[in-house]
Image 1 (tube, each protein chain N blue to C red):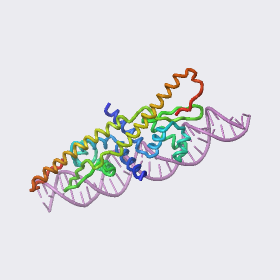
Image 2: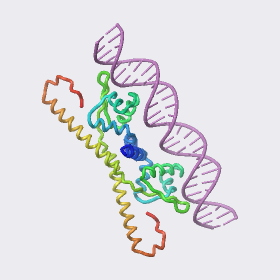
Image 3: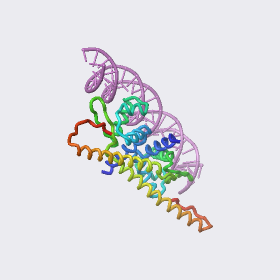
Image 4: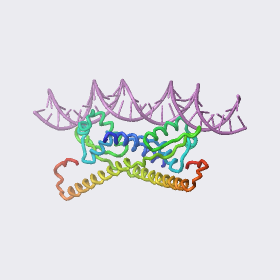
Length: 121
Length: 121
DNA sequence: CATATACTGAACCATTGAGTTCAGTATATA
DNA sequence: TATATACTGAACTCAATGGTTCAGTATATG
């Protein structure tokens, strides 16, 4: 289950780690679009766009539906909850860490000696 | 400047798109560690860990300092502000999108006819 | 029916990524 | 001084990415 979430975080962050794909998400945020629309917008071949869309689909960030010859892409069901959660958790660790460092610095300032080499936490 | 940020988002999201690297960040959130420490923790060669650390360093998420033979790794200066920001913006777009969809569904429910095929927004 | 449109799949290419091994260098320690 | 420790760099393997072209298939349109 943890590795399940890890796999998902891997997939999502890696889907987000590409300018074009983030662009597609933003675009779809303003309205659904066909593969051809996206190809025009991002000046890329249909095949190229298709690949990006597949990646986004597999990460659950986009859904598509084909009607006639046209495949329409829309935002998917996931709203990046886990990703936002992970980042938030990280930010809290980060704060805690640097608060601790601040305290340490204060403490060191108090003792002018600064004799021993502290194990850097 | 926009592409500057895009490059950074690329680098950071891609740094986060790996279970081991997220693990390292979490580990460092609880205290600094040497390359050897991390290698033990994640059962990987020194060289392997080193590469991950370099990636994290380049994304600004980790800083390192070598004293004697030991390179100590700590959390870096960046606290994922831009990434949190991007995700937040996306979530808002997402909400807006699905609110609009909800409205559309309501509207369709009101007209029992459901005659014409609406352009899916 | 003929033609144009929209997409799909296979194959290819160049680059990057994750990981290894192995041979070093530099620093501690006995 | 000899030896062990901690890291580093180069080189290699193997798989995945990002992108293309080209040859299809399926659907609209005149």
